[in-house]
Length: 410
Ligand code: HEM
Image (cartoon, rainbow, N blue to C red):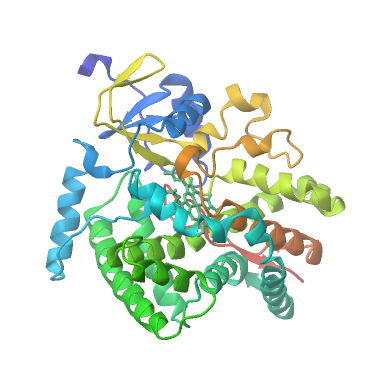
């Protein structure tokens, strides 16, 4: 592309107001340049393009198959790791490897996440939600992100994995710094902070695995350890990478669905009333909230051959982002009401909030169960809840959500 061809309008998520409302800007880009270069990677802003990208099994998720991607960023990670005295190693979780490794790793944990297995957790999820709501009710005011949206998914994934008691605040800080690396733009300070946090998290996970070896139980961590002990199913490094992924993905995403979802319900009281009046809306309501808030705003692939979208050539070995949040608001897919929250929307479940294709979110049923129980219980218990202070965004471009949502519930 020559300078003369460069679009005058470019995607700039660092512009003021973007965190409050990324959708207006995404809409401008989707209309003007739906296949758009974002610094060193391509971004796809239309639903159909994102869908095709994610469903194309010939593409890769392995960063090392890209020429351009992050050479500078990888160097920054390497330097930051070496400064800590630790050699830098790329992550090998199922999210970043291709078949046959991807198929083998995913198969090891799929059973625990089927809709049927997850449904069995409903009573425990309800109990955890009720405890949170009881304590908020007793206080009258509460930051609902801290007291419900974060705590619930964190406690549930801990329970499923069978993790020991740990310092929640410390882990929250580490995983916050780590997931920031999913953003398309990072400062050197954020890279350094994420590297240190990964080293601490890896050490913590290694301790947890050692602890579990002498405390085997009926949980997911034990099953993964058994697969590792079996030898050819899981290496020790892979074991640690999968535990870290499940642990982090298990709470850093659903917190945004519950927190931002509740915020949007409070901003759309007629929708909240409709749900309160008709509990059977629950499943569709959660899908519509997933579409509307896109807790994961973008997902990545590496082109293994030349690609073409909307007439734009994308060379092999490019790094390509499916901008899920834009796809989920694309009027070509959702019609003129794409930017409205409509809990009864037909076809809401066709959103791309969980991705699509072979890496489709493994935890989708779990996230939906947690959100349905948390949100439905909240709106039923606290029909007069109001925002009591200034909600704060978490500053993340990809795992966008609220850091705090102060509410008066009594
Ligand atoms: C609202 C909550 C959630 C959202 C929006 C979400 C979103 C996503 C997305 C978009 C992907 C696909 C990434 C890609 O295509 O490259 C993904 C993958 C994944 N998610 Fe979730 N997720 C959520 C909750 C969870 C939970 C609760 C877990 C439980 C452990 C989980 C575990 C995973 C795993 C393991 C993968 C990788 C699957 C693979 O590579 O085959 N997620 N998620």
